[in-house]
Image 1 (tube, rainbow over the protein chains, first blue to last red):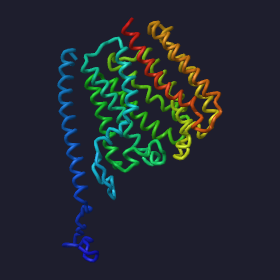
Image 2: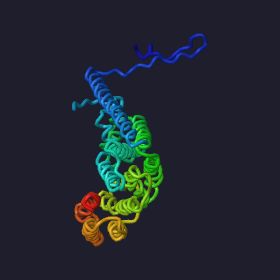
Image 3: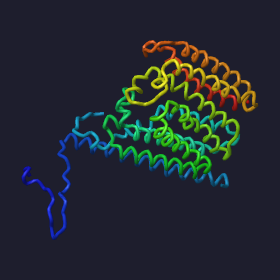
Image 4: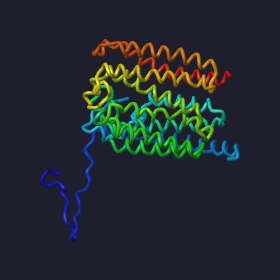
Length: 68
Length: 302
């Protein structure tokens, strides 16, 4: 799309239709880096969530044992 | 870790290591240690899981403070050599992410503390986080040279929280532990700010050496070291600890005061000639670790 053809939004049936969001162009290396970080963060989040489920379970047992 | 030059590094999802850096892990270690000591010297012993959770909550709360502090001070951090490489000023993370992370971590730590131990400890944790972020970071730090003196209260909470998590009430010993850290904070930070004064001046932070000068700061370091030493030894004559702690606290505090005297008589204005200040700063970290270790040892040996 040239500068002249660039989507600047338009009116349709009396309503303003904003230009479609366009992601900035990225190289394969950048995309790979983004995916790698997303994978790493997802993995760590999963481990942390699992650990907290176990922790909550142990807390419940400990508090039950203390008759709280 | 592979590096990649991007036009806008903040467009990348932040690396998990940057989230760890956001929590200021080195500061957190001292906070966790003092909180653990507060928990261990308490007369009531918690089950291991609950004790572990209490310390985890203190650590998460400290992490939230670090994240929110870095979120608020991103422009200031960018101007100082010591902090320019942090995730936000270096552009490795966007501010919104840091804010969400900090608020989420803080809220989670308070909630977990309340559920696992008691709500008095949770309220204290919440107060310490809010005090650090709102009173110290937002209000005092950019406005007054006494920022460290009052803001030091936020860092003094952990042993009190540790004790309350175990006992659900406040007593004389944890209040003295609070006082020790509260009075220890100014000499510790002012010793550092003497030899990184130019950084603080460039960032426009009114630390005492920037506002009042070297001589006044050195005098005040000694001025605060004396009541700190009294507070450190006080648990022994008050019958709250044994003689082992009393003797060790006295020796450690005398060394602290000797180093503070060396700082007080130093007239150098060049960081390279500030060996006395660097020694005091390094010793102050050791002092607090040693004092609290001896306190716990004394409790277990008694």
